[in-house]
Figure 1 (tube, rainbow, N blue to C red):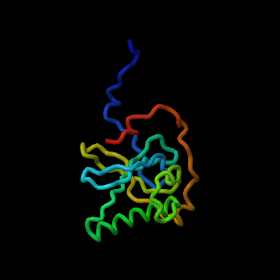
Figure 2 (cartoon, helix red, strand yellow):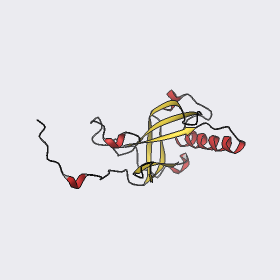
Figure 3 (cartoon, rainbow, N blue to C red):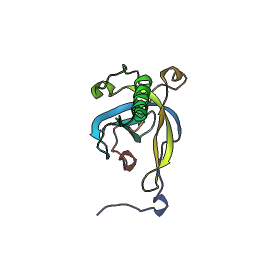
Figure 4 (spheres, rainbow, N blue to C red):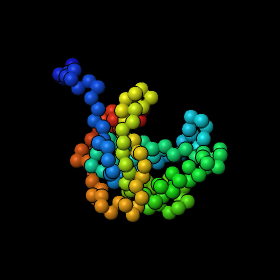
Length: 149
């Protein structure tokens, strides 16, 4: 039998990463296919000093010149922020790279607030940020906040 005391006050509480600008690290990077059938990269982003992670999806959309430009702007922001050579699409080279991002809160499809990447911070604007810090509980079992919905 499980020995647990349920606290109804905890139901519905979220431990969101506070909004702000942080150093971030690409922990995982995978090629995927979007719901619309386009190629995309799924990045699992670890936030300095935080236990939770955020997911970032980069969809390669060349359907119009404007969409192609938007995709290239997003790629350029990643290359710049994480000091990845321009045009390097090898995800193995991306893993472990440290950059910076503005984290914000947005509702998901269930109207639950989730932390996500608002934008990546340019390399030249990262000097004033604190150095990368692991969360003190690194290595502990993942929380429900670590699962994308």
